[in-house]
Length: 180
Image (tube, rainbow, N blue to C red; front, side, top):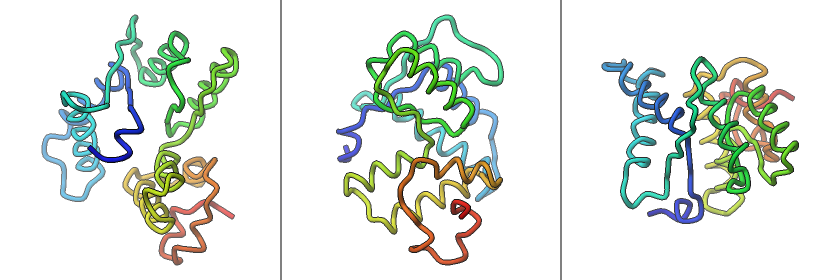
């Protein structure tokens, strides 16, 4: 087990786990290098961790189970409402969902950071587990692989990350770096 896995105990909800299983099942034969292939492989890796006996990853059951297009976010909101003292960080790409979670966090006076997925890579940099160059490259790869191409999406992905990767990466990465 890696150093980060010993320090971090990732949790998700049964609703998010169901969404991961959907990504695996609905992408039967994705094209090599496609977003579908990335979703299937990434989702399967998370599911493998969640189902592993010695894994620090776990799944909490949220009842009643929310449904609909924002069910995953709603399940996180439910879980935090009931057990917020158990968490330090919640990671979501959707900035509107993060803002909603931040309001809930403030309302309950929890000490939780609601961050975008690249922030988790920043934790690796901040704890000296990866270099600044590795952090910048991995963050850009995450943004590109996820297909986050819009101005606001790229800006939100870099929000709360105090690292200027433009000084490290050359112009070929401009599409995935935060706007000036």
